[in-house]
Image (cartoon, rainbow, N blue to C red):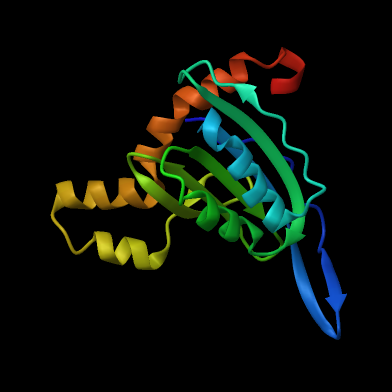
Length: 179
């Protein structure tokens, strides 16, 4: 399955504010579909969290009539991705993915109206990392339940549902952009 391909963070990024260090992260938000009536509200929520300087360019989403898509990149304090995911999940009709990378962790958030929110730790290549806690919980079940618990931990259902949107986004890019 395709992963969100974003540039990888380089080096340690921290800023000092009043004697305390704040870890910076780099993030990438992909809104695969948002109803046209919500786009301004979504923009305000994003700008409220990331700053008014964020420019959001919406394009029509051909896979779902009456919806639009966009991508946003940012550099901000660690946790901005979680705040975005919390704010955006309140609009039930959105489909989005957020990838936040820092020197301490890489996190992927995915949301669909049918499945809700999914959070996973990922490695530098975008592969989901299953934690010891998730494995121990999954092993408490029979084989079919084990498979389902592992699929849930990896976000397989979210990948399957969002794949058509990812593929549609890649088909719209020129070959040089997709590489």
